[in-house]
Amino acid sequence: MKTSLAIRLAPWIATVALFVFWEAVCRIFKIPPFFLPPPSLVAKSFVEFWPAIYRNSLFTLSTTLIGFGMAVGFGLALGLAVGWSRAIYAGIYPLMIGFNAIPKVAVVPILVLWFGIGFIPAVLTAFLISFFPIVVNVATGLATIEPELEDVLKALGASKLDIMRKVGIPRALPYFFGSLKIAITLAFVGSVISESVASNTGIGNLMLQAQAQFQVPLIFAGLIALAVEGIAMYALMAMLEARMTGWAQRSGFAQT
Amino acid sequence: MTAFVALDDVSHVYGGAGGTLAVDGLSIHVNRGEFAAVVGPSGCGKSTLMKLATGLQFPFKGTVQVAGSVVRQPVKIAGMAFQAPTLLPWRTTLENLLLPLEIVEPHRGRIRRHRAEYVARAEALLASVGLAGQGGKFPWQLSGGMQQRTSLCRALIHEPDLLMLDEPFGALDAFTREELWCVIRDLHAARNITIVLVTHDLREAVFLADRIFVMSARPGRIVAEREVDIPRPRDLEVTFTPQFSAIVHELRAHIVKARP
Ligand SMILES: Nc1ncnc2c1ncn2[C@@H]1O[C@H](COP(=O)(O)OP(=O)(O)OP(=O)(O)O)[C@@H](O)[C@H]1O
Ligand SMILES: [Mg+2]
Picture (cartoon, rainbow over the protein chains, first blue to last red):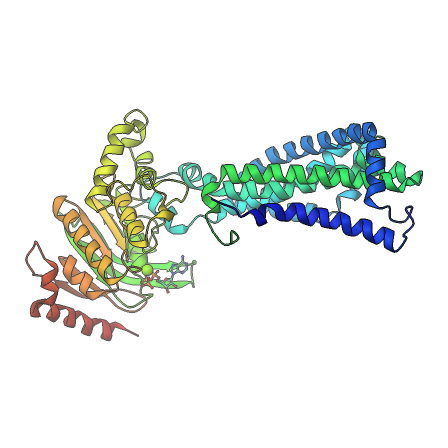
């Protein structure tokens, strides 16, 4: 399919425009750099502190990805179980809703109590915050099998496992891959929260220290690093989704 | 010897005691190899009848027998097609056809090793409904009529003894519908298959069926039974004969009376 040049260039133009606007506002209104540093200053600080930013980014990235990986495994298994049996669904769902309602920042102190500060609480926070959408999506995919199709298969003597394998799971895949985009973003949030509260490493911690030392451009450099990482991971998941479930993306709705 | 599909004095309620009484005192007998049609007002329990006859639902009263034995679980020998084609969008048309073979024995155990043989069978079936060479397309790349043909093929691929069609042509335009009438007519003629067709279209029922059952409004039961004595093979031309119109009119009168 041919995407027009305008659509391909649009995100870059918008991004550049945002930074130009930001720079211009800072200069025109003479905003003090310790209040809102202009992008040029942020870039300078980015270069200056690159080794620290790089090291801490890798840390945040790894806690996010490990927590996310755990969430995928656990979320998939739980989603299949919930979609498989109404009894499991009835039993677990209220618990899950309740658990999901707890802001995960509130859980970090407990994790620190159990595991100390640093790597493990960050991974676990990422995991805890991100498995829920995966469970819900997988279960939804399974629950929305057309009853008529189920009838067709049952009249052929298909077992529940057959129906799950031939229809349920392939059907749930687009929901699953769709949920990964949300889950990875949430996992990232979880990691950064935990690092800000209870860690000596990670971008969250770097920003906290920069704030304590009043290095405002470095705080913003940390933000930019987070944004870039977040976008990269999201894009990766979106690509994975498009590759794995091409059949589900046949609508031309958003393509014009 | 009892009928191939026999429902005797069957009553069915949805949603437990105090729920909707869908059919009540329903009896219907369809012989082996017969083409039966069921007509009746909307919501009278026609789809329920299909589900009872295939063991997808169980009556709280009365007996359901298929091929001489009481139905206690899904029958395993029936092919079904509905108004919606319900094809799997992630499988090509050909792969959709192979789906029943991945479930029904003995094909289930053989399909991996003898795939080429089954693919050839599926392609031949597609060709017989005018879809030669379309097997590689995905269902959503087919027109509604083509999808419905595929759905019919899926119901037939494992050569079932019993074919249950629940308004399979309801969503199609008049021309495509008549084309598919002929497809079904020829399939019935070519194989010794028992067909139960639910339809709203009286002309369709008269053109295709050997016997037509008229159901009352809910709770449904049979209020009239009509043999169609038009000789086979029938051509679409018969739909313009006075004999054909007479039967359609007669059925119409029954339906009008049956309506609540
Ligand atoms: N799964 C269900 N749960 C509860 N009630 C149902 C269910 N399926 C059908 N019914 C009810 O049973 C009655 C008969 O339904 P059925 O689907 O058999 O009618 P029908 O004759 O096929 O109608 P139509 O011609 O509109 O397809 C209706 O009143 C309907 O509301
Ligand atoms: Mg119906």
